[in-house]
Length: 140
Image 1 (cartoon, helix red, strand yellow):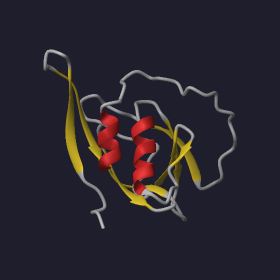
Image 2: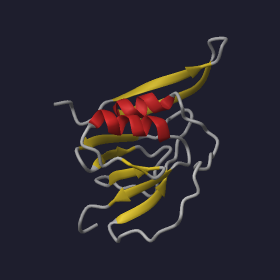
Image 3: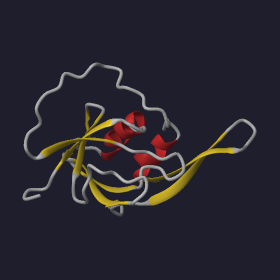
Image 4: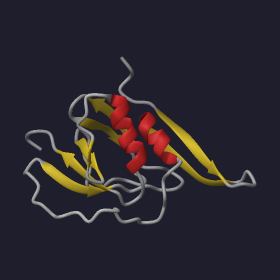
């Protein structure tokens, strides 16, 4: 099996070859998403109907710094989503705790049986300000 996570940095360049943004991401989905990250707060395309969340779920918003990325390291958990393994202080993720499960991004479920499918969802949805649903471990 793959290691629980891997980290790396990416840079976005303009047509003249100058660095326009740097990103630090974990897992292949985060790396793929880095090229699509926008520092603008873009609203979801479909209007979401607010529904109360179960007690073990928490609504959050992803913070992405153009220089530092999201500062997350995650591990895919088949059928559940991605477990948050570490959170760097910057940009910080105030609503997240280590051990939380990232179960949906922008209303799209990450509780998939295939890691490649979950990676694709992340790659297509991750950006600054995107809404997330986290599941807290029992007892937290």
